[in-house]
Length: 181
Image (cartoon, rainbow, N blue to C red; front, top):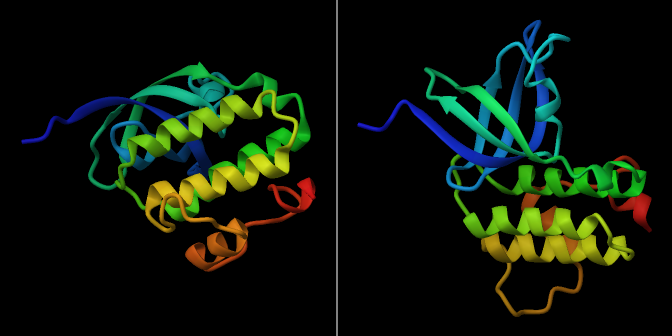
């Protein structure tokens, strides 16, 4: 029998409204892979978890298995990457990273090396100068880890391969490619 409660570290990939005071979070965790969690009451102004659950925050959380989605009971920030949030281009690229991971992984799909890679690229993004090259390297490495492209083989256009894998283009003024050209 699996335990009812669990805890893990994760990066918040996305969030959306769910009912009046709740949110559904998409996170990529170290030990459980991609998860969807309900965070109860976080949209209330007095919620203690509210600031911890921003997109691309690294968090430590506890959750309980539910009938449908799991319920997040505790959340604590490990790193909020505040240096990234001071620059609009860096924020756009961080959101792009989260969208790439969200579109290329499935719920429950575990890749501990992908979790480490996400954190590494977010840390590099704090001080990086060549954002376009960083974006391409991130896409290339993510495709390698997930098995969509063989390691060591040259990939001339990571964006085209990513569009093929996700079956759609992942660029807009808001998230990544166009902003960084």
